[in-house]
Image 1 (cartoon, helix red, strand yellow):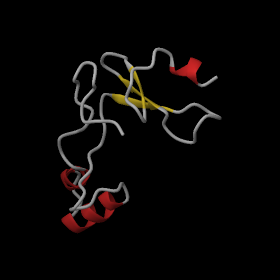
Image 2: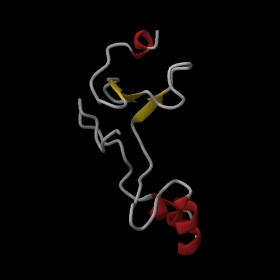
Image 3: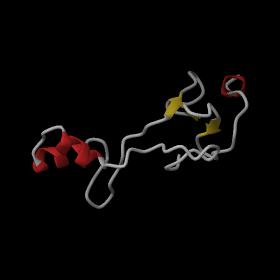
Length: 94
């Protein structure tokens, strides 16, 4: 699980507002914002935030989902599960 900041350069990886707050700022009623945010796993008891400055990398044939996180600021790539720095994610896919 990725953290809120890049372990290498400390750049923010999450928006400050919750997903519910985002939809409210887009003109959704509170009720509709809560319902829509729930589709992203954001609930009042477990608020979630949209990501920023980070990209998920999926390697076909390795795992059906994100295997690596890449910081768009420092371009460091991290293993999704251990958050250890990976020199070349594509070499690890072979």
